[in-house]
Amino acid sequence: MFIAMNRFQINKGREADFEKVWQDRDTHLKEVPGFMNFHLLRGPEEETYTLYSSHSVWASRDAFEDWTKSEAFRKAHANAGDTNGIYLGHPQFEGFEVVQTVE
Amino acid sequence: MFIAMNRFQINKGREADFEKVWQDRDTHLKEVPGFMNFHLLRGPEEETYTLYSSHSVWASRDAFEDWTKSEAFRKAHANAGDTNGIYLGHPQFEGFEVVQTVE
Image (cartoon, rainbow over all chains, first blue to last red):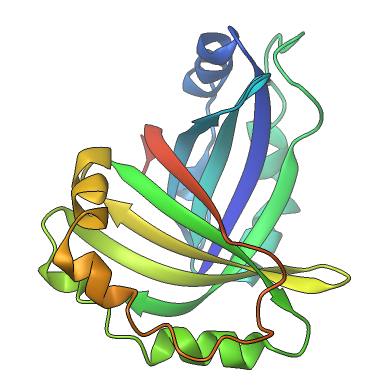
């Protein structure tokens, strides 16, 4: 199992705008082989920004990487909307392999 | 739903020791109200360390915070083992609220 996270620093006061971008997006994820689930996460508030993270779970790293090269990926990122002034810096990608599970 | 993550910077060459500490731990998590699942995640390798993250999913932030004040929490952290030289710096806690879900 593989978890792909992208960390976003969102300028204070723009949180609702950022969440709306994601709500309005058609991700096409459900059609993608190996896709398990997606969550948008709101993290801690820092002095100048609020941390968010996109969080998607995949059957394997390969399934995720295949998706990033696909037409479905291109479509999901084609209409990111008007994000002017929402972001403080670039998103930071982190991929994680599951090494232990307790359920 | 709430996701609690703790980020660990593990010195290069000590990854197996770190994973063993977690494998040998009796977390008692299954008995805890509101606990959904736990994963230990291995993230990207940086120049001087490998990033790991503990990742637990809870019914709510309250359920997680109740656990941190409980006897089960104290037990889970009582025997962290010999971690001498494993860590580069302190773990960094981040709590995330789920704001959108695609399944």
